[in-house]
Length: 74
Image 1 (cartoon, rainbow, N blue to C red):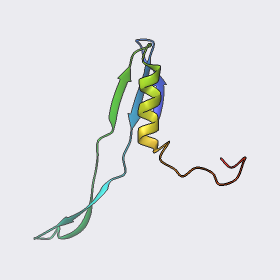
Image 2 (tube, one colour; image 1 turned 135 degrees about the vertical axis):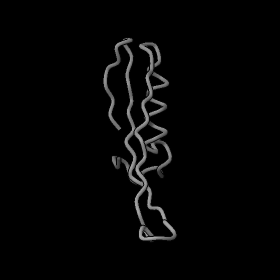
Image 3 (cartoon, rainbow, N blue to C red; image 1 turned 120 degrees about the horizontal axis):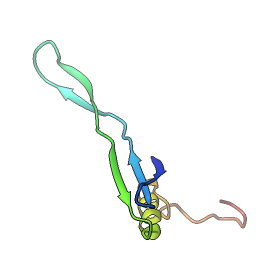
């Protein structure tokens, strides 16, 4: 994930994904291969800070982890 300032005063978030394994059948190209996934780009306006943080949290899985068991664990 890459976050950069946008021309509109907000931010642009670009996601690059790992290629997906695929199974190809038939011919000389049979077997396992990798399917390329195009990056996604999302642009948020200068007043959409909460949406930016929500988007980042969703894609990084923040808030879905177990709570620390001891004080001071992060």
